[in-house]
Image 1 (cartoon, rainbow, N blue to C red):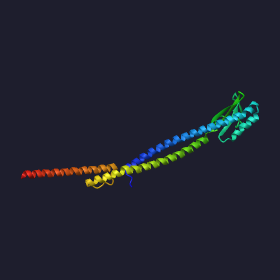
Image 2 (cartoon, rainbow, N blue to C red):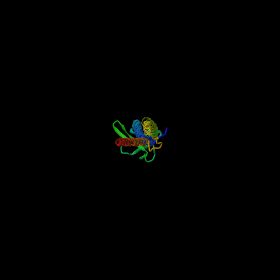
Image 3 (cartoon, rainbow, N blue to C red):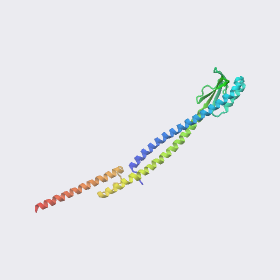
Image 4 (cartoon, rainbow, N blue to C red):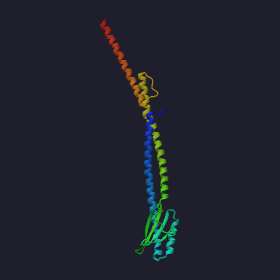
Length: 231
């Protein structure tokens, strides 16, 4: 079947609205997934920091710098940790996965800290710098997937709406136009402005025919009265 102008306009509006809605929903879903993943990662890193802080209690209490450096160096193998360091209560660096100058403040990481204490004595602080790059990459991949899914659903809904519009509105309008055109005895206009324009054109033609018929009847009645009076 032919897609008429009203159907085309409806399709453009429906697809545009569906696309905007899909983007908004995909963004909201992706943001929730990102937040959930970020919280999961934060909880995992907090637990890692807590366990390593416990492991550092004995070496730091015994001032065993070698054991302290071994524990910190082992954190370099963790895939989510950019850098790890431990400092004393005055902030002096004791050990770090970066051997000179400590971790600093990596631009693509966020810190997770745990206090190292032994029998109510604060021995220092362990800081883990957690990589955010992998988390952001996963969030972007989830966002693209969610957007693709919602756009596909929106397109399917728009196409379904066009079929529904055609069945519930366009076909009845075409039938009404055909009936009016048949009553007015004028041919259907195959290229109107749109579906409503075709119905309006046919309806105006019907009114013109009715008016012409009424005029003919009035003229016939006038002639009949005049002929009767002439007798």
